[in-house]
Image (spheres, one colour):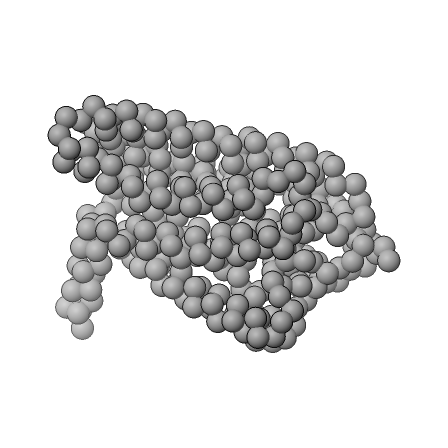
Length: 311
């Protein structure tokens, strides 16, 4: 049965599984991961407020933590709400808003990581000019550009999906509203949105940030190899190891999730990658950056002592 979206008040979110026991397990896992993600990223944000961490690296790291909290909240909250309430419905406009916000935040994370790779390039390749190049004004302008770019870049495919005139069903085979499952249930021609999506993946959305990040690390590695002492090389590599780990993790999951011959194929497999991308990656980011980061740990200790002193 074909229905016009003008008369659709809601979509039904199918979720990851129909098995009640598996749903309970997924709920518990997602809840635990969400709480760890929230606490971990809030800890990073608190640490980055420390005066001794008012540098470009930690400014962008604070931005990344805000993005991770927002992205996991936008995508994961429906899993938690649906399990607690038993209702798997979402209004048409709420679904469109979720799709837009999630797409924007995904692009934003990529471009912020690209900005962070440039920061690491300047720190290692031009250390004497680091504070001049990565001054507060430059950092704010660069971050503002990233936020504006991300929320503008997702508009073309979003407007096409929003204008779909009919749907075969209102059941979305996913755990949140995303462009891939929505193109599968429409009875409209999806060639335009698939073309736009493919162009953006190969261009501004994913490929250009990837190339810029890759180029930064080519220069970084070349500079590290010129360092004569092994301890110096190790120290230089250590300063960018956390960022490189996060970049590899994120791009691996995104390429697996979105780069396929057709947007509509293998949705069950895509749901697994999407769950890892939206739940595990935001949880791992603060752990990767804080576990071996002496500056972050020292800032947290200072904050803890200050809070004890205030009491």
